[in-house]
Length: 152
Length: 152
Length: 152
Length: 152
Image 1: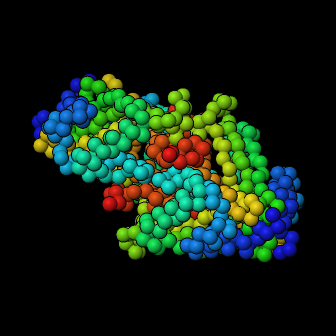
Image 2 (image 1 turned 90 degrees about the vertical axis):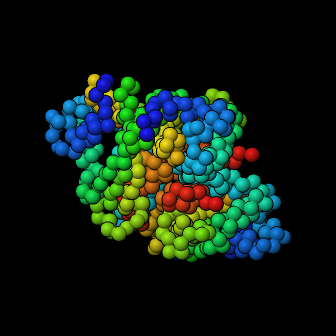
């Protein structure tokens, strides 16, 4: 798999963000499965590109469009067919006070994706969060705010 | 509030299980709010008797009807208008192997309800789980099984 | 056990705070076991009054003496020999900024103790935290601050 | 940094396991800092090679020497100076029944290390666990067993 490069990983995520399904399918297999870490409502394996896109749509809704990711680095192993991209993730829950630092409102973590490639396409991805981010992000994903009230 | 007795608390839960709404309303205020602990999909304050009954229905569905509770003791303070009932809770997720001991399948905890009474009726309840039950029960409530697959 | 009253529970905690061991032993059995909830470094059963007092000393050290508890209510069942006391707990980790609201620094929860009495003395106690307090208090008990640095 | 290869990452971990400090120092900076994820007693940044080796010794003790890791793949970015190695980790707590599957006894996860290299040496490492491994491994690291008893 001579074509698994840092640049190709970057292009895969650009395609994902483009909304252009044909372009996505140059990088992401139709049957790609993607694991969201943790045990919250969105955790576990999302099976197929559509399910994964559905998950990304949910992130957009829950964050009121505030979700931002910034890439730090991308590592690859073309022979084994694996890449890892490292990113900072930032998102404020929709409706939360803009200056809130409560982990029920604010997601501010560093995360990675481990991607397995076959024939130039991503077959499987696994998200993972660094440090104690799995704990704090569980609060962000929960249906409750700092006062225990459930989101409407 | 001279009528807050161990027996009355017991009757309140019997009414809840009876399916008879008029009987429930002798003990549970129409606007009762009930807090499910943790940060899983059902956590937080369920507002109103209907929302609380909806939660109980969800427990029944997720456990395929296997949910069992057994009371250990009931403590009361009639002057302050509080009671606490202590119960063992047991439930197997619907579809799980019957002999599974994985915490993603099996809930086996001791839990309590703190109830606040006014004029002979429950206005507020807060569930709580003993020991490390909050951790293991988070796995039970999650959408995933031990292999990370999401429930259908 | 006709003498298990709200007042006696209150006196048991006053004795505990008095530092007077003889007075403690009027309420707390020498072999009392006490469960700290969760899975952090202090979690699990502390066996014997000395181990329990050791735990309370650790809370004092970690909080730089800032730990405060305020009782909300006490419920009892004299026949079964159980009491439950409900309290707010507040503590700032030693060395944390005084105005920090990070759960790694600030403990601000409502908690309960389920106590089992025999012959007028407490044989067993189980602490428990309401709402999502088990999650946030795990951060407080951890060796790390919000930046992942370990306490010296 | 033309010398950051998959082979060099592999050699760095072999050196770590060799017990030969001079050999380690060919790959690991004396002041390397290494983050153990989560909020358990060993979580957070271990500062310096000695602290990191101390952590590895603790893993050996807690697991009664049963800890095993198997590498799945290694990805690199020589220009940015980053590598990621992906490994399965398996460990049984010392004293646990050999066939126990309780997460309080058995660690069975897939984990990664994100390593930052400078001038051919590792300056910083961050461990991270995939899937819901952060939840289950918190139980493994806890002082308690499935019955809530604290390890002696």
